[in-house]
Image 1 (cartoon, helix red, strand yellow):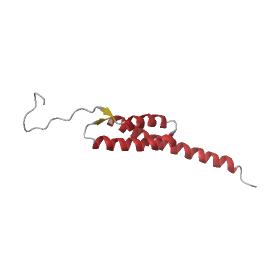
Image 2 (cartoon, rainbow, N blue to C red):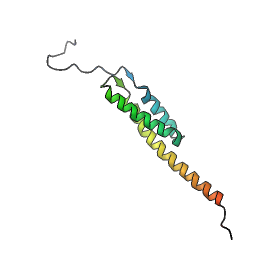
Image 3 (cartoon, helix red, strand yellow):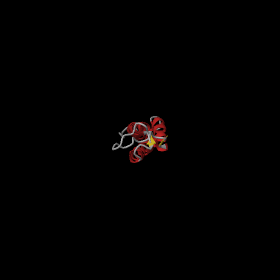
Image 4 (cartoon, one colour):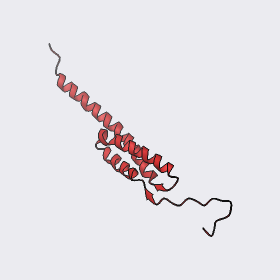
Length: 103
């Protein structure tokens, strides 16, 4: 028991001893997802969202909330950028394949 503990007040929670592994993986995949957007972006999003839920449910025993939030946000951005790039390439491909109109 802490020497500063007073009766009637709960003991403060112990600091997190380790980070949630999915939080770190989410941040890494989100960073790579900016380059490979449509492939890794959704994976980073779901890993980050799940890690945030686990960290909140652990009541302070798990750390890494900022890494999970970063992976979640970067996953959303990577997915959006990947979708825009994919759509742009698809339109360019359709224009190239269609060729000139018949006369």
